[in-house]
Length: 251
Image (cartoon, rainbow, N blue to C red):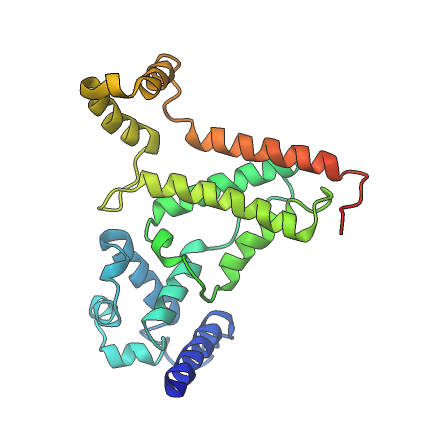
């Protein structure tokens, strides 16, 4: 048990060093044929095409034309490789501080950029669940979202919870929009088509759902789930921010 724990701690330390440590570049001699960035981008390409399950140290080594042992000189294992992929795919977070419209417009822009990222790399949904080590880019995304709520009067935990609520909504839309092949489609259209087909035969058993879908179709609102959810989250935050303005939060 102790050996397993020590091994896990050692792997975590190696992952932290990989993500956060310096990456010195040789100042003399030929440029190395293999690099951490090249490994990460090759793994991302595989995951984009075939899903996260297709990623392995051996598969990426084969893609790059190197041995598996050569890979371990750069990346300590698969867990570290996935962490590296996540942070590389995330890239630099969107700048929000220069946008007009206050916190609401900033978080709206952040959410849409995040959805675009998750639809471009659907495997990120699988790679970013549960306790894990995050890298500087991913943490930067969170930093910018929380910073958008600075000055609103919300306490730190409320700012974090607000961002988590937005994040959860975006992840739900992204999850609905992906297919087994990993190709994103409009989530409302995809779900609505399946349900509409069923209701043509069984609509009498689900009158409320049938009426709701008919109304949505007549108003052309089948694809508004992202907008609707964000607006309701922001409306609720707006009420809370107004309540917090000029008041002291109870201990």
